[in-house]
Length: 411
Image 1 (tube, rainbow, N blue to C red):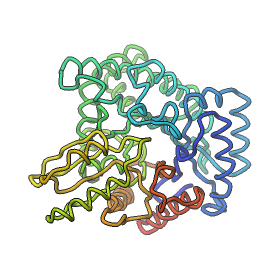
Image 2 (cartoon, rainbow, N blue to C red; image 1 turned 180 degrees about the vertical axis):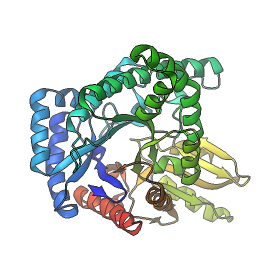
Image 3 (tube, rainbow, N blue to C red; image 1 turned 90 degrees about the horizontal axis):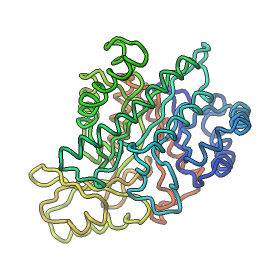
Image 4 (cartoon, helix red, strand yellow; image 1 turned 30 degrees about the vertical axis):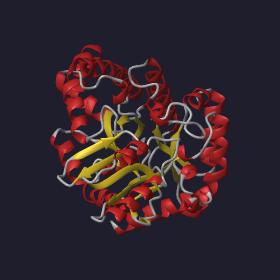
């Protein structure tokens, strides 16, 4: 839905199912009721997640036309898509396989191109008849623990290979814009243990690989000057600001935005999400209580990376919650865990959430308007502790109403 801070929707990766029939059934069951509760008088925005299988099925013309008709009949629209999870995302062990196939593969390229073809058809026009922009968020290229990441040659090979494939998608976006008049952008989503996990790493990749390789290739393919090619790359490749991910890494929102602005780089969308955090008391028994509280969120489906801040201010990274629980020691002053907890809950007993980071990001959005796309992304309802599980539609409604209240207060 259109808010003062931009288009707002919820990411449908919250719904189980991997075929288009599964996806569509989930939308039909949830969206009309949510629209009635949240946006009865205005179009309702959706952040669409499609598995690879579902994307192949939706691109079949009769399926795509039927979905367009359903969106129109229900006064809904798609303005962004989540292209990070390629395959199964519910009821299977996902863990590091959420990155597979990664950007070294042609499968990831073809999947992403397909999502953009679908999005180019689904994107609506605004009240003036102009097509709105659309974005597809994607993985941070690959998962660093799959490679000998400390070896410079290995890093260079991975960055070169993945960048070449990203540029194949960029070239497709240039062609699609000429054909459809739709401006669309690929939004890379830094995540703990991705090969891009911080703002600085995104900027280094962009300036050291994407721009040099892209300027040369796009200039040759489309007859552009270097300046025109650089502008096109910056237009079509942006950062997905997942609030949870940046909070887990202790990155301050204003500093991230300032760094991007200094290099002329953009944010494609904000994924509104919250992580778990807690500071450790001095007393040993109280510290153990906090550690055990984190242990209550240890579940086998998703990766829950932990970044510990030590008493000396250093950051120690653990690839998953079991590793952090085993590696806990007296130097740890604070933990932040990659577990997308509900936005509207700030306290979990001795644990809290990074809810304040969301408030700060939305305040910065009100001040700077650095994107026009906001997507609520809490996908862990099925693996939450039992006392936090509620009806899915009711839970989504509470998430969205919490964000809407914040957006109204920032006007």
